[in-house]
Image (cartoon, rainbow, N blue to C red; front, side):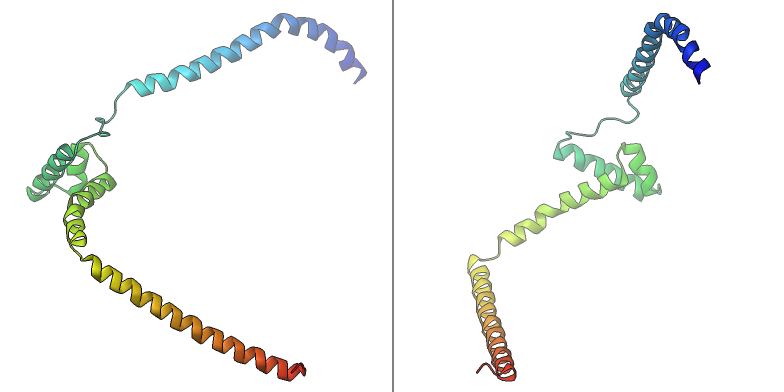
Amino acid sequence: MADEEIQIPPVATGAAEAGPAAPKKASKAKSVKAEKPRADSSKPAKPRTRGLSDQEKLERIAQIEAQVAGGATLKDAVKIAGISDETYYQWKKAAAQPVTQASVASVAVDDELAEFIQLEEENRRLRKLLSEKLRAENADLRKRLGMS
């Protein structure tokens, strides 16, 4: 160890010369790493599908369904359209959803109010049963402990 301590100062002077070079190498390595993602991001692997209008989404769904009807597999048809399977199913569900929302909107407010009142009455009834049960248990425990 004593020998190593003696050798460190000369290495330290050599390291002082190599010291600035070492951080430059590290910064070059960082800049190379930083450049790689930029190069990858400049390559559009898939067509950009964000921000499509509802009409464009419906057109893609129709295109996929036509290809499936023509004998292509769903996976291939979706790949050709440039979207994922999940996206296809989400779009298809969203396209069918406005029809169901219209039927929900047609439900009368009176029906919802009647259901709400019925639930409140059931809630009151259940609370009353629970409170009676707890009072009976409490009275029974008081008797057992001799507190009454």
